[in-house]
Image (cartoon, rainbow, N blue to C red):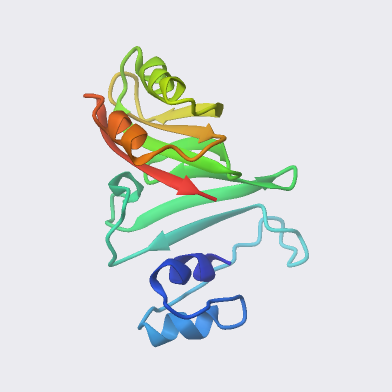
Length: 171
């Protein structure tokens, strides 16, 4: 599924679970998988997953870790996938619907400013969470939305002075 998700947006061909590995190899991608057994049993279900992607550009630079790779982590909670880490930022985001992810300066009022922009444009917020490295430094805010914001709405969010970058994800 991860390989399919990486290849599908850049492929003109139909990508599915059967041909995803082949499509990746055709594009010169090297895929490696490492499984670490938590309790010594190969039968135990997958608890978490970390994906690292090297030598590519990111639409969201904050996902790039100290070693220059795009790094994201996740786990399944109650049958629902959750994003638990983006780059160096820890968070807990349910991967359902549509999400706006913003990197910003961690300062008072940011939740309200972004929420106000969305409210003015009649975009309903389903959840919001913030992950940060340290108070008053940088943070990543994830906002679940019920409707797809217009390009103008996303531009207004990007124009908020403390917002350094953002990406809209339709899941």
